[in-house]
Image (cartoon, rainbow, N blue to C red):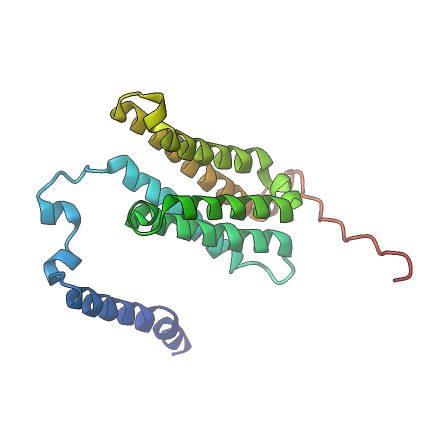
Length: 219
């Protein structure tokens, strides 16, 4: 009985409410029920592979969020709080990127000049405040992911200046974004698995705990 109540409270009722509210709001906004419920290729009659790589990129963001947040909220009571906090931050950021990529938020609703700097500041602050934890896990993967995503933005910014064909520009830009998303997923997996791996592989070199700050004189 307790499990049923937990299911209804955590999953069943919230999801049903989301479904009903979404249908209500979108139909009131002018969409038909079929347009809301059917997949875009079914509605348009286009191939199911339309936007294939872009859709896989969204899967990367969603997978990174799911792995990070699931691990963060299943941490042992005596687990590493530094890693748990990092997992919550990267998981939440991954959800934001997934929503942005899926709904084309920075392309259609909020100017890229506003969204991208916010993302860059967040990543910089994340690296500054959690540098020790990040480099204990895999600093190279974190920096590689950020660098490739930055290169994607840079290519997009100079596409009209460099004068290359639009299709070539898109291949390069989206290629950097695709690799960046995959590398971000890799980092999130490494962060989520680090303690699990040590538990099942005792020979794995353990991560030393982050030392506490030294007490100042007079404290």
